Amino acid sequence: MKQMKAFIDSFLKFEFESNRMRYDESISDAECKKFDSTIHNYTHTIIDVIDIGRSEGELEKYRFKELIKVNLEKVQKRSLFQIKKYESPKCGDVIKRVLKEDVIYLCYTGDSEKDEDYESMYSMIYVVAESDEGLKIVSYFFWEEDEGLEEVGDYTPSHIPKLGKLVGVEKYLAPEESSSLADYNKD
Image (cartoon, rainbow, N blue to C red; front, side):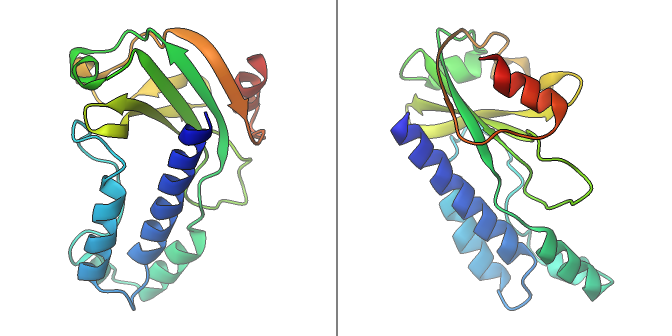
């Protein structure tokens, strides 16, 4: 899991920098785009969109320049709570087609925006695996307080209906929110 932790830590560092750059008026759209392409090297081409970086002309759309400053102040690096290793997952055809091994890793991370009114909790759960393109993020889940893992999108061939057999867990930081903490403590 050492390699997995290094991979996701590196991704989270680049994601944080990209999100920071998104609201920094001193950085051009072209510079952001170049940096964002590095981040997309972490994701498999089967993933449509992970909301990273600045879209062309995004800063011009803000009517209130103060909002840019507020957004920049809210950016934070996602916390890594834990990594779980699963064998023999039941994956949709799209994911099954690209996996090199019958193993996936779920990397439980926090939010990318600071909010003092909320306790730390799971936000994004990245699914990382050895794929035909190398070690990549091949999918992701959202965390819903009352529901747990929630699939992204309606396209079932890219879903993971059964995670498989849990064969390893590494814990790094306990979340504060009750449903996240209950999940963290159960394995």
